[in-house]
Picture 1 (spheres, rainbow, N blue to C red):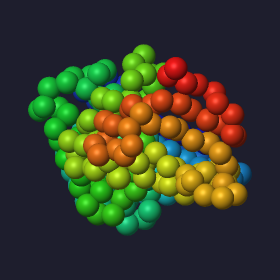
Picture 2 (spheres, rainbow, N blue to C red):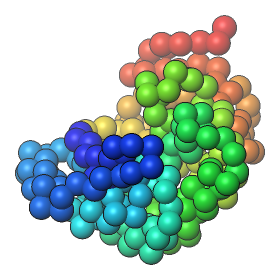
Picture 3 (tube, rainbow, N blue to C red):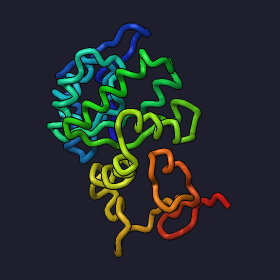
Picture 4 (tube, helix red, strand yellow):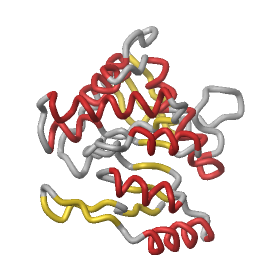
Length: 209
């Protein structure tokens, strides 16, 4: 997996886009080696570079959303995925609605255009490990529990392909990587944070007790 900063914040107010020729060459070489490429877009110019270069996914919704609606629709049409990381913006930049509202709206537009979503929180960059705030933010962006469940299962399985063969579904012959919830069925996205146990390759690796 390769990540490109196609739009890099050099100051809190200024984003510098990667040169298109550099981005294209990086994506071409990564794909030649069998690696997938994610881009950190940041704004309209960074998003345009990512799409032009042919990345496989955007690692975040652009947080400077001005002028990105058509670009995100184009990304959806090219089967690019987006890892929203909505709560990361609220937790590490600003939580006010003037800032985070347009980011959620941008994600909603991408989904409405047929875009595929991969769940991710950017844990490591921020210390918070609770998934519930991200699930709640995705719900506010218009995603149902079923939509979010797909972003946790079949969508990443399809994105990663042969590297994770047998994952993403519960079926005979599949890989026994399972997350067991403390609810009979997830009615809302936040229910997916109520984890009772984690099983990997058929072995219990964590239990709530």
